[in-house]
Image (cartoon, rainbow, N blue to C red; front, side, top):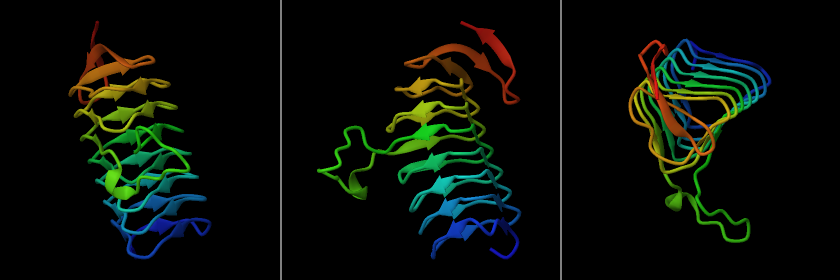
Length: 167
């Protein structure tokens, strides 16, 4: 962790790996077992839960929580206040425990817009783009643009995020 920046207001638990050139800004919490790659930028008020794996050059905007069971590959953009889940049927009085968390995978180069919700158990494909405010309730194919509640495919994008086709 000696070649990364962690703001003094952030808290890093024991047993965390943080890659070089990673920047963690104000009021963040990185929990035990998290593995963060190189060159990540983490905005303020971000929570990275236990055992989460995040690839290289990921940008996580303010107010995002990445819960256990979520895997983020390289070059992913997580917009402000986007939301992940890890339990399809949560009950406070009947916790299921980590062994029952439903996995979510965000593949290389994907973008998740501000205030989008990713329901657990789905894969966001390579270089896919989830529009702001969308609710993802299905797998999103590579290079797809999805929007709405629930999110539906409405186009295709290239690796740079340019819209190639509207459906």
